Length: 397
Ligand code: MG
Image (cartoon, rainbow, N blue to C red; front, top):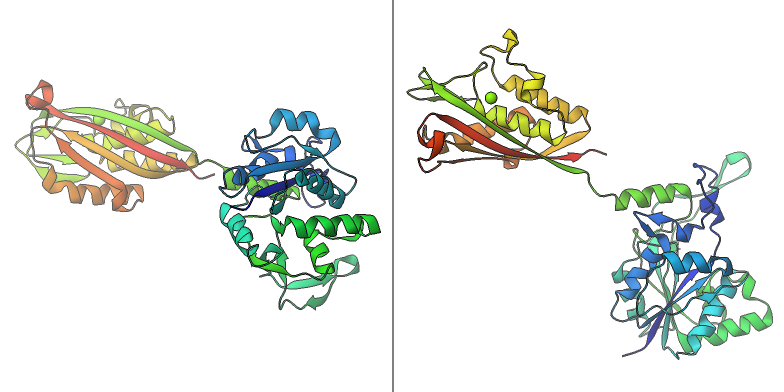
């Protein structure tokens, strides 16, 4: 197998990220590659796909001489990662320093990657490596989908830039090592190093071909503060909360019970202040619990005569509103009714449809199950119906 080194260039100061002209300034002066994204530095995130890639043998990071302490404290440690190499005054010099350090390991291939591209995927790395089987160099590129316009003085649009054949270059740029190093050394000797836009440019200037492979829109460069906002959003964990509910109603006089809004004929009714719908009460409590908003009794006190004989749908609808007001959407509800009688299962589809309607959910997100308690306890003695429910809600962010 060919030996391959990944060179991560992290020697820049990231001034555009520190003082973006269109967005809020950052509150500290940490270079962007050491800023945290969901707890991990941009640099560490940019390194990880290379440490994880089976065809990458070694990783060399080029850092700014002032950043040694920051690097040592907060950067990914991995057996593939060697000691950092100090960068130079320009990006090209930093790359050359890295190449010289890599030369000691005599690699066959080298990938050069911006430390500010933390969402590089293993697929792009593989495509660049594959292209090096047939070309001395390869660059991942993306179709420029937006119209390209030149903007003139005073922010006035000038001419349209012809988009045909225009692609946006990303990193890692890949090279056969024995092709790149002499070309970069020659550029350094002749003083043309600072004028190179990147290493691929050096290859082209030397008359060799650079293959274009498909890049990845996710592999964007974190440059201005807005990019950090986007990166944070991509990494944000959903705010998922769970609530549980439990309720019991005793049997009393009557010729039907109401369970989850469905009237079920029975030789007894359920007693309670409202319509005694133990199913809807339990779901209401689970939803209120998920957003830590107390229980059904706090919102609808049994002492209040206005709730007498009330359709319990009113309670559930209010709980659904409260969940929404708190910034959450209901994900799913799972209710278990516990009784020896009446038989619940034949009515479950209608109950599910009613609960789904009240909660604004697809019926596939509502589960209603029934069980007996094997004739044990108060439900087993047919003294009443108990219910338990779990509801999951997701922050709408
Ligand atoms: Mg109740």
